Image (tube, rainbow, N blue to C red; front, side, top):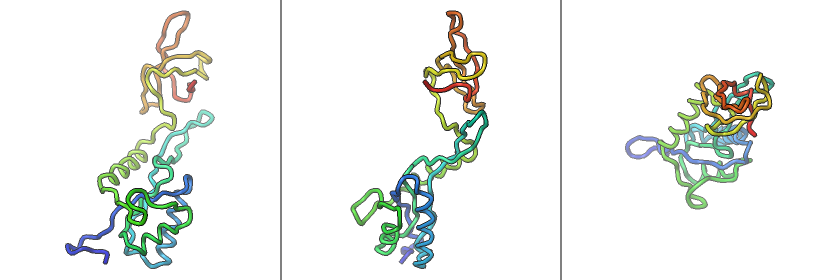
Length: 185
């Protein structure tokens, strides 16, 4: 019985714990097992929460995918004994998160929407893989100020630039640098 009296689907979102780094494999394995068992009507979407991040490698920007909930997969499903067993006994799944041992607690639609929005933002505007903080001391690794250390005064993620206060001849001088020109100390 996958629908209640009002005709609304009884599918809810559950959090499944997977071996870290195996989230995509778990998603694949689940889909195959659902198809083999003919339980497509009891399952909805399966999400591996990822966002796109910008990495700078050898001075070149590359967009890569980063999981922001490593080890977790979200599964929209009707919870009954059959579906519980199917998920629980899928390779690389360690179990459900929350609730009693064989009665997991669903997460709210709000929580799922927050995650989906975060994923969407990551696709529209990838974040840098390295997070910078105002006040953090960094070392300049290329350009005219190579090997100088300085404190970050301002971070501009949109332009991938930092304003760093570098001490030159005993005076603090603000210098604008690209993210790839500095490194954390």
